Length: 231
Image 1 (cartoon, rainbow, N blue to C red):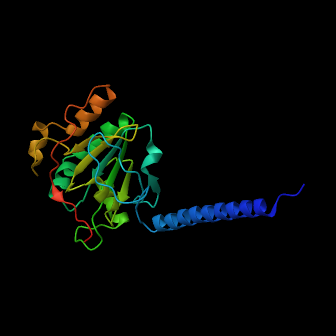
Image 2 (image 1 turned 90 degrees about the vertical axis):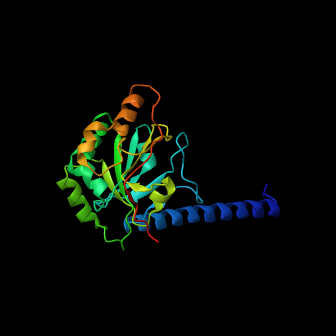
Image 3 (image 1 turned 120 degrees about the vertical axis):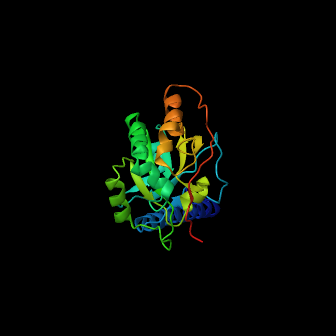
């Protein structure tokens, strides 16, 4: 027995709507992929959100690194992830790289199985801006050992996390929750001599987290140069 005309019409409408929705999703994915290939960064999800506090879910994002490889935060689910805001033109950044402190902290973290993503949110018009190849070369010259160095020239990731200084550090746990936000250590200076006397908050937090202990200093004061965001 053939279906009534009204039933056929209803199924046709539903099928058309489903087809349009699928096409819209495919179009959005294609647009995002093309933009990311050109160096753009995206927050996953919709709408703007306030920067997360410790204990809240970390915003997901997708970005391209200095070698052109795409990374999505949620791809690292199940691992601790460290986000480090950086800018080679900042004397506080140079303090921690020139002394070997930041590279050593990166190596200690990745040796534990953590992912380390350095993020540069310096806008292209800034005198501190380095093109991807130049930034990659600077990192290698410093003996740096991040998992990747992400380009965030439009400041999308930095603004989402409320990154204020270079350096500014964030740690995300395997469940995607922000468990640390603040400075790399306890002495806010640009002097290398202070490093040996300071508490390295990142090493401390990761050591406690991997040891199954609560993080004793989960929110500290970040210090350094202001992030050179796009205005």
